[in-house]
Length: 209
Image 1 (cartoon, rainbow, N blue to C red):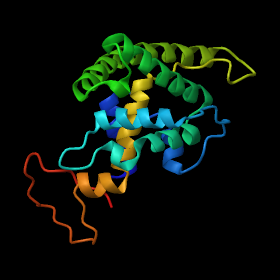
Image 2: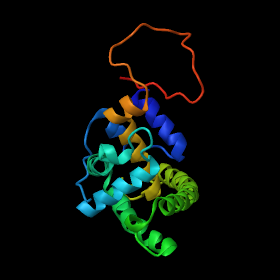
Image 3: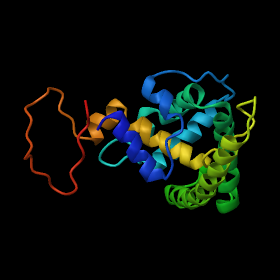
Image 4: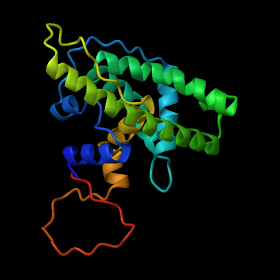
């Protein structure tokens, strides 16, 4: 599975194109001045969110690849200023929503409570992202009609913060050495092509490298 195919699959799973995918593919950095300032507590929280999305089973989970640090890198290097702001506000909103639902912070919730909470965010994200698509289409129409000197006059709505976190978790994990060699199936030495290789349902997918 190459990077483009992975991005396409993540977009299908999350219902939105992957934020920052252009710079991720080219290996470039955003020209926007980084606004995000991550604390150690932020990183620890993102590690636990990622671990809830991809938990350790017989194979390592997202926390094993330091997914919080990966999110920090992607947000500061590949997100626009508005996207960075939305992500950082999302960290605050996540904690507030969790306390409202469970009466305690995400870090103090047990596994079941975390799973239930993220399922609630998943539904919330799908609803908001549907509204976002309609709004952004309207913005695109306005931009095509109105002649403006300032290209930043109109802004589309960013995706829900949980969508960003889930996208980054999937992207970081399945492009990591751990994800490709211990979760996806991997052969370190190239072998011959076999177009009739049998497949058993439930087997792990093959890594590209």
